Image (cartoon, rainbow, N blue to C red; front, side, top):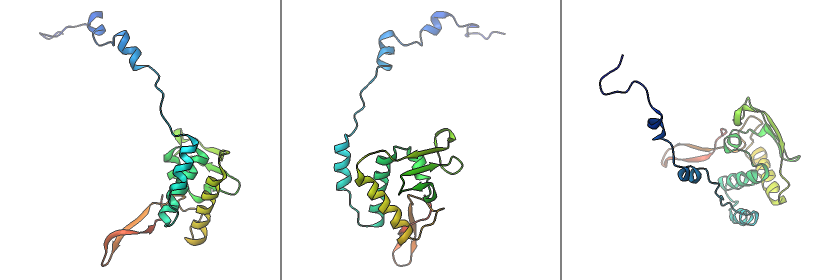
Length: 163
């Protein structure tokens, strides 16, 4: 059944119209150098970060953890304290609880980078356990606990237990 104004079958020239030219194809698939910071740039940025409030400590430890692990951000934000052994430098990314790529369970160790990153991260874990009394089921990098405070309105009340 054919309708007026429509072709029944596409021809080769019809399809060829939608293909890129050879030049456009080469431009689209050309490899480009992606600029990234050097280890010295990263160390400079890390040293410039404050370490005063709980949120400063969390942010600096987050940076240090990325330097130590190189894991995906979705996996890191879903880690709990029980998944990390900061003293031995082990991280167990259990796919049943951690948002890993393709739901893979991954056991990994810290990269051999500057010891300052490891010390910062260990201090963060001790801070969570000793001062904030976080347990193994609590988030490694908790989000802000936002809520209503009488007289102040909606504000940040500290660290939440969730990631």
